[in-house]
Amino acid sequence: MGVVLSTRLSLSILKTLCIDQAFYWTDSLNVWYRIRSHSKSFKPFKANRLGEIQEHTEPKQWRHVAGILNPTDLPTRGLQATDLIESKHWLEGPDLLKDNKSAWPRKPHCDVKSQRKAKLNLRHMQQKSMKKKNSCIRVWTQTTSHHFAVIDKKLLEIREIIY
Figure 1 (cartoon, rainbow, N blue to C red):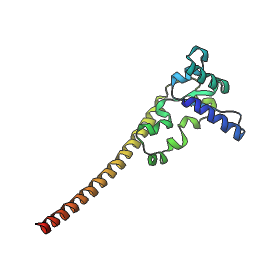
Figure 2: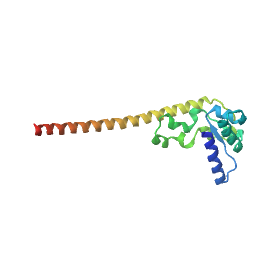
Figure 3: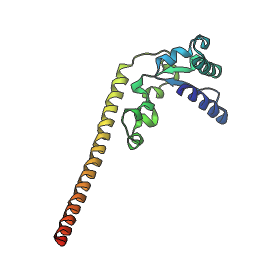
Figure 4: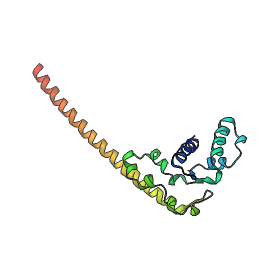
């Protein structure tokens, strides 16, 4: 479904901005291969969506990016919006996009160096995010403890008045 939405959105953007060429990236090998196959070979739901994609794009426009290099996966890996704002990977995408288009992979491949770097960056961002979460939990715990202490003190005062 994401690929269909991407295709529809890009058509609107291309038309509005008078751009004649676009490239599409997916981290799904299944999607990448299906776009290159005949849509009629699938059941109606998939066939209709693939047909729509194939009607508006060509297989050569589709590229594969390893999941770890896909910035759109960052929110699903436990990062908060504040972490994404600070993330170069989120704002600029994988480093391979800065290369000349002719250097972009045409077929899925394994760029171990880029994937290792992305994993380290992700791990660092996740640790930073956890520190923020832990800090918030610590402040909440301290505040809650303080409130309970105040409530206990007030209850003791009320008991002394009543008894």
